[in-house]
Image (cartoon, rainbow, N blue to C red; front, side):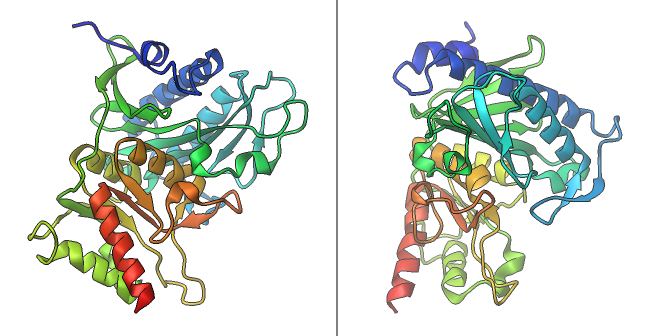
Length: 338
């Protein structure tokens, strides 16, 4: 059977998408090259002394892992040379990353989490790179500004993730459905392995860190208990599956159905908040989920409708099968009326 590469798929099947351009193909090619380099580092981490923490703390207040730093450096180095970007934003960098004057600039903006789930690296659990692609909104002859980056998720040109596990996968959407590609190491190409992914309308799995149960408000506890109990549309408890690596948990539920939940919590009583970053985690995965027939909300609002107010804004996230996410929306709405 003839195998289809990512580039072939973009050229043959994405012609109606705003991403269908030579510049986008170039961007995707270099993003894939960066991911191959990161995948090589992940696969050899134990041999190359790149396990563990660097001793530094990132802008999120989290320990920087050695592979985090490698992935971030690799992406910035490769992507600033593509000639099609005007700016980037990374979970690991406090500020907007502008393309240096010595490189050609384009119209695209790349936002990424270089290595999601990196706290699991030392125990050999799947990690991934999440990415979001926008087009600038200011004139090309002006300096790119933060306003060019702070766009709603609905304005994404494309979004997706690379999953580094027993095999390396690319799952992405440019607004024409969701497609998965698996890296064939023998030829060095990502080949189409999961065409037109559709998430089941209802799943059998819920994913949440239940250790925070006592930090949740009462409506959130009722929602989690709904999925754990028998008084639901399935008439049976959902199975708990929680890896603690967002991209791994999302990927499993995307293929098999289910819901991932990271609710707002009250660990800091005076400042309840969600944990996940809107622009480099929640928004790109919400784009993928919706394109696959799923849904994503913060408990009240559709994730893709949220107007970011800052680069590293955090939100609660409920994402997955459409009917499971609808239950969450309905239960929170009822709680607000009570």
